[in-house]
Amino acid sequence: MTEVFLDESGDLGERGSEFFIIAAVVPKQNCNLSSCIIRTRKKFFRNIAISELKASKSDRNVIRHVLTQISKTDIDIYSLVVPKKEIRKRLFDNKDSLYTLLVGALLDRVEIKDNLLELIVDKRLSPLNTRKKFDNFSTHTVKNNYPSIRVQISHKYSEASKELQVADFVAYSIFQYNVHNDGELMGLISKKIKHEIRIAF
Image (cartoon, rainbow, N blue to C red; front, top):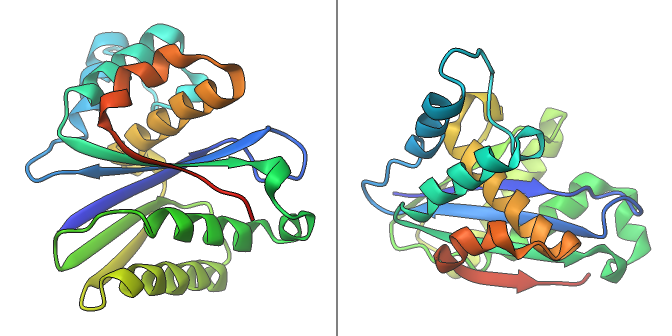
């Protein structure tokens, strides 16, 4: 089974951030991705109750530590970098549909070597029919490249998935590079980035 954990950084408003980033983290066999978060919590938050680690709410030392742990894991990272000025204005009218299109563009590049794909995404889409549209489009995108593959899609809250928290830190580091020209954080994981896509709609 191939697992793909998706998270994003930035916003999909017509204004707001200059870029929107989606990161896909694909752990290889026997990769314990959750250990990146577990080790960081033990080092920095041993006696502090927090529901999850989020890069945007963490100080620089915590972010560096998580990314350093990620750099030691056996993973591939795929990223989608979207300059929002290159998105047609009418697409901003339905952010959920735009998000679905962007995820499809990223999934189109993900290399899958097994006969089962499990896609795990942060539970950002509601109501249920919106998630179903996302699931159907994502499944169709994957099957275009891998017709015989089985696709399972889970929408989870990031508090319940340490792997999604890892994807959050990855997306954040790529966002910092593109928006603030801050390459230090992304540099910690750059060797794990298998494919970066820049896209316009």
